[in-house]
Image 1 (cartoon, rainbow, N blue to C red):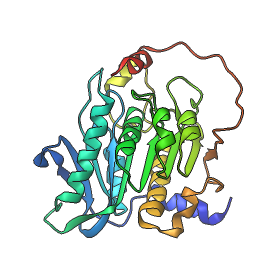
Image 2: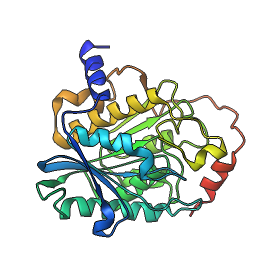
Image 3: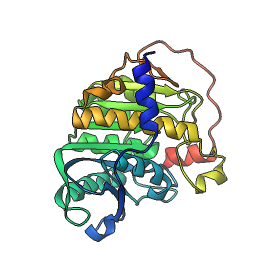
Length: 285
């Protein structure tokens, strides 16, 4: 484990050098939020999909963090009910990217480069990002603790040749995670990392309806590590910044994470009973 990688991870857990502005996507016809650096031309942009029974506000810290590092980070605030449409959220992610590239942001001094786009999301939103990527090529995809969706991400992955970062927690073998099958099926360059001691809902911020269904609390360590891994990966893939190449390297050793080989044989373990939340996820359209 090189000191340089540890230093980079530590640096990326802190906010970047840019002052952050917040905007409302609804002005352009899409419910949601957008966070940007104070100024900048031809910036990279990320459209981020939220998890089940959450909204864009539950990822404010993550989106602000990306913006502080020079990204336009936007999140649609739709499909928040108990039976959301994953296809609908995927469509809204693509609409969000269209707004980022087609509208001058801020006071008109902020613009996005059409070739520096990424799709990302958490759990259900990660699956929606994959669905969106199957419809339109972008520079990179980031699936954070992906959960099953309809259509399933693993059935679409063989036709997606975009580079992908897939993160998973300690529940990587549970029915609520499809990180391994998605990574195994992905056609493009893929990095699958498991975060030490992380749960799949640990990055969700603030109060949320999931708490009533037994979801765990916000995990500050999981959130910090996730932000750093995502930021480093996107800096490398969208801006071709070789300083952050280890974050896109499946051979790199990064603190608090373990690289998982999705094709390696795995022990069959007894599957836990489905929770109310998991049953609802599997019934979503």
